[in-house]
Length: 368
Image (cartoon, rainbow, N blue to C red; front, side):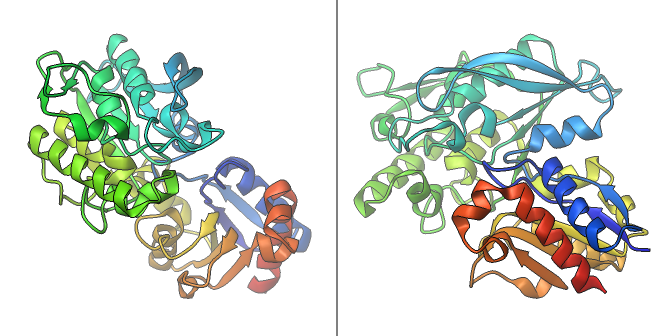
């Protein structure tokens, strides 16, 4: 009898981590009906972070809130209120950027005008309710605004040379001449979950590395935004070379300026859900994500889970929507690409549950 810990991340935009785990279990059971499964859906600060906390903490409550989304229109979303503790007597709010200012909320990319206002509005709503601590997941950003939208929603003002507010989003970065923080709300304890270690500026910075994913494809545009982020860092008094400050289009840097502490998202979520303890008696640990590629080895769920599994003496296995040629698959005893199993990426995206079941069966046969 095999004990299998199921700890995938969400497959961005197609299936949640919890549903992915369930599908993998169904597939494995078709090969080994006696297997025992321990479900521990994961997240790393991006999509699924709130759901991971909700599943792990008894008494967690979703709080509805309306915010200005990245497309510039009002959206209905939620943040998560965790029960009071001795360390956080007013409770802890878990807010994720993906559901407030995330790229999945866009029908089309808005490289210049998308911003993080919605994230800041959800955080402000939590503060209005008296929370003592904020946990902020900042994966899946739609913008490269340096977190100016978020800080504006919390009371900061970004002004041009005439003393007028600059435009929202990356569009306004070049015009920022001064920053007025006199109205900025005081920060409680703020823990920031991120899955990247990039600095704010430079060749590994927010504009250069992640800007193209958000529509900043012209090198001159990337350079302009990079210069704006550098100037913003100087005005806020933060290190633009600091590790993780480039996360979420520079939102990491803005949260540090507010008083937040950056933390590896996968490790924080794993600790919360007791993943290491769950692995203690495991024979196999299955993880996964939508695209396992060359960036997946730097703070993402699969590589982190592979390390935990190795420490526990369990075999790590991977199921991913696709596995690119530059990905490090040596971390895993077996891998399954949904695109390969399904015959095409389009089919894998259209029917993720079906092909995750097939992947689960494939991995079970590999374990024999």
